Image (cartoon, rainbow, N blue to C red):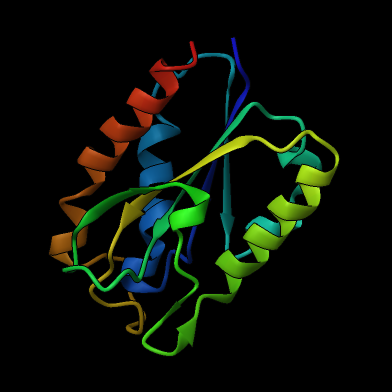
Length: 152
């Protein structure tokens, strides 16, 4: 079995930007295969090279400002990821991609996929995502389980 790391990004008090945290709370209660490791990392995904390096696959769960309608569910490859939308750079994602480039030098960089949603509100302080985003949590959980199934 291939080793799988799932990184859950975002801040739980930043409304829709806490999407990864909310997905983490669902998956941590599930009986996942032994080859799957969960890491809720907030905005600091780039601080874990020692955990990322050597994994076979990494799934990053987050929100993606992609210009699509809020609530749109996305599955992106690293080369499809947008760092700047409407003149605003997503610095944590930029740093994560820089880290992946550095890990790739060792030859031990995991196959990486990004799964998440386009947020509606990332500026309001709230533990609760907007309804449009909250309703997408089960769909994203199912997508993650399908990704896991491919490698077990």
